[in-house]
Structures are given as C-alpha cells and as structure tokens.
Length: 475
Image (cartoon, rainbow, N blue to C red; front, top):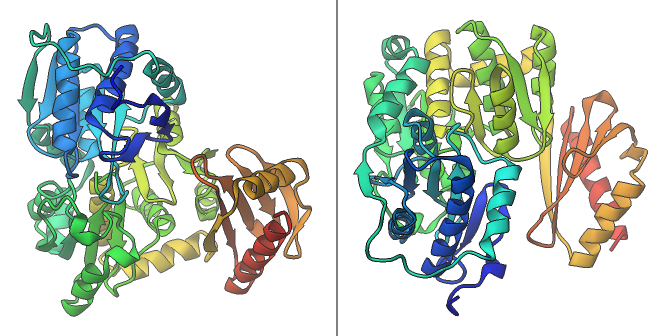
C-alpha cells in the first residue's frame, strides 16, 4: 500500500463516502474505494452487465471518475462513463434502464467546493442499502490503491444519459397542461449538473425562462450548491422584479430541489412535499402511501389521514424511503432536507422532477403558488411550525445527552406531556397536541441536532428554550 493512501480516513456516511479533495479524497483512495466496490460487484452481478460512472461539476470530479473507470476496466468490467457532468437521478435512472451492474457517482451533493464524494447506486436505481454499503466498507481495508495495469480486460466507453432520462420524465409530467399555463420561470442552476436538463425541460414545457449561473464553476461562485435561502438571493430578487410565477433551483448533483413562490418566499421542503402530495391526489388522481423521515413534518400524517392513505416513518436518509418505495406503492416519499420521489419514478430523490411537478401543480390549479401552499396547509389542519437547533458540544457532553435521553427521556417538554418515545433514529419525543422533538447525534462530529414541530410560534420558542436549557445542564 502506498503512503498516500489512508483507509482509516475513509468513512461511509448515509450516502457514500465524502472527503476533502487532496486531503483524504485522493486518487489512491479513489482507486482503493473503487476496488472495494468492485469486490462487492463480483458477488452481485455478472460481468456481462456494464458499470456506469458519472460525476458532478466539482474540481477534479471528472478525473476521479476516469481513474475509477480505469480500475474497473482493469478488473474486467465494461464501463460506460457519462460524456459530461450529470445529475444523480439521471445516472440512477440509467443504472436501471441499461440493465447495469449499478453506477458510481462522484459527487459531494450540496457540500462546499473543497469536498468530493463517491456513492454506489445499485441497478434498482436508488441509494445503496446499509447491507450493501457495509459490504463495501468491509472490503476497503484489504483493497489495493495501486495504479491499474496497462492491458485492461474490460472496456471504457462514453455515453449520453440524457435522452432516455428526459423521455422518461416526460411520461411523468403533463407537458401540454404546463404549456397551456405559459408560466414565467426563473431558474438558478447554482453551477450544478441540472443545467442542460431542467432548463431544457422547462423550455420543452413552454415556459418563459431566464437562467442564472448555468455554467460549470468548481467554486460554485464562492457559495455552496445548496438551494436554501442564503444561496438563492439573486433568484428571489429576479422572481420579485419580473413578477415571475416561480423560481427553481437544484443542489450540486440535482437530487434536491429549491422552490421560490411568486412573492419571493423560499418554500421549505416540508411545504413542497405537502403541496405535491395534494397535487398528485387532487389533480392527477394518484394514490399510494406517504413516506417521510423522522425529521419531516407531521402535516403529511394529517393529510394522509384525511385521504385514508398509509403513512410510514423512516430513519433519516433517502435510502430508507427508497427501500419502502421498492416494497409498496408510494404516492410520495420525502425528507425535510429537500429530497423527494413519487409513484412511478425511480426510488431516488430527484430535484429536476420535483421542480417540474411544482410548475405542473400551478398549471393545473391556475392559482399562484402561495395560494396553493395556504390551501394545502389548511387541508392538513396546519399550520405547524418547525425549528432545528445545531448544538455544538464536546464529545463527552454529546454522549452524556444521548445517554440521558436514551435511558431517562423526559415525561414533559416545556409543559407539554410526552406521549411516546421513538428510537427509530435518534430519540423522538411524541408530545400531545401533535408536537414532537427529535434528538439526533452527528456520527462524524461533536454535534447534536434537535428538530421540533408544534402548532404555534410561541410554543416553538418555548420548546427550543427548554431543550437548550436541559441539554446545557448535562454538560
């Protein structure tokens, strides 16, 4: 093993391995992880099925992808690598469509520019399950980081994943209905992989379009490729200035969505999930279960109850939602961090589709998006108010907090009774009146995230103060 490789630094999180370019995310470590993935592939697929490789717009992501392709070809796999940077949902769709042995995606998603990552997407087109990633991680220690040989027994070719994906997306959308609405849309690509995809679909659907930041910039304009308020200031300004119907964005690898209504409000993913669940039932006649993570709004539960739909709660991570989508008919599955998929689509989050479904909802209803939001919230017996505290604690303080809440969870939070304690992911306190609090420790840093939801801003503030104060006492 060369000195430049350090497998102790390779840690797989909820969605693959991420690291800092030139620190732990190096060419030797990419070769090592690729071989670990290849060892898994040997147990699951025959070599007559191609391995797909794609990458996002980050610095060196394309070179890391080519390095990985060379390693796989050396091991006898036939590799198809995308002809340009590519959204994660696009390579995921092609992994299934092309009957592949799965795909390797080089991306750090919404993380800052110094990061890169690699995730393995199996042929079912959704995130790898913990069983698969555990298998890959177990292979890392013994995997070599050596350069591949000069006479590969496999092949490397390039392909364009776009046409088949777009054809599929158009089957999920009512293109003519969107065309008839003649929507005015502002699109901020945030220098991401969705440029050339989302803008093309919007134009195909007859939208009047203005695009921003639709070129590759490995530094993401000095910001982060995350479609949240602080990154969407230009988009908000453009929507307001031009009285647009809608503002759209995606994160770096285009699996997360960003939505701005006609008033310039950046909608929370919780709100978008609710609006789209209602749209799919009311306007498109769809049905199925609703799946959400433990940290996602319970307005979806209220909505599901109204329509007699099954609701499933999963651990945090889209892989758990994807797993449920492969087991049963799921109307919509999503998470508060900005990922969703719908019935008929792949079990992977897709920012391009999510953005287009919001445009479709406006076209069907003939109403401003802000009004659709108010109607959906009212129908789900809302509003409910959310908050998240990121408490940076020492490692010992973090452990003390989790230990205390695991063994002796409180019976009352800010004067509200605890009805039930859930341990699906972290510790979730289900309170009376539909309120809840979730504590989740970070697996990689001394941080505890505290999520909460309740029915008034005053109560939300009281719960936040109570939790901060109680957690401080355990330090």
